[in-house]
Length: 416
Image (spheres, rainbow, N blue to C red):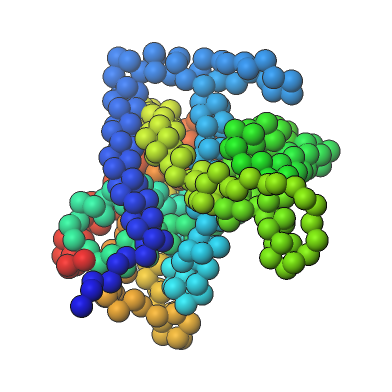
């Protein structure tokens, strides 16, 4: 009797999780290094480095400091990877299967609503209230890295974590676009439209080189920057526009007409250079650079909180308390309650290999917010005291959630 072989999709997801687990360690090291620099005699040099201004000499683009180029520039590539993951999952992944996707999507919704409500109960003022979305995010790299420390857990739990994190990313993207974008400059959307039109034109004529889309991407990024939408979301738009089949544009239409015996021009079109869809090819190409380059660089640029400079007056205290409560208590509570309701009302099913203790572990892991939480904190607060308190709380809350996850995971671990 032959042993069933894992599907290509499942192998791909497991490879993705493997990279994320290793990158979580690199991310942790970068955050620790930033904290060490900010709380040592190197603190002045650390801040001076990130405040250096850099101009690319591009029209419509003023000089920005190095943090700007990391947070608004390189993080566009991080969001491109997120967009590619969402595009692929919606096409033929877990998000394309209603029966499989329902539970993690509903659980993710609970994991967004409850932390936000907890935060708003604690931080009620208009200035501090802008941070309500900070504890709603999950850092997939850290979460998978911590899960790898637990030991052997069901494969279904890893897949559920991946799906929940993707749904969580979709929620974070919508929150940033709707609540943390500046006043929209409608005229600048002409640049956005031009960038999208160029991308669609290149796809229509079947251009396959990823580099060819860099110029339209740059036009789209500039349009986002000047229109009031956060420019990093450019990556999401490009990811969602990426073709999910190996053939697209002129080549696909030509072969489709031949298949229907429709007369076509006698043009010899070359076969695709790769049997792999662009969405999978570009994702595989970018993933190591994002996981081991861009995300650790973001951590090093933003996790350098000077601890003696963190204030605990009323405003900063409300921010830090709301974030820690949201991550440590709100995330697992929201995820488990939403999952319980979905199963109770027969909207979704718990995978046979999982127990409710595994769902609690999933909820605690989701409380590791780091990358996206700090990203949202940068958008939420201009006040240095509130921003420092928010970053400190994200680090503290994520550390507590990680410790709880390892402890709980050791208790609920079972053979994969």
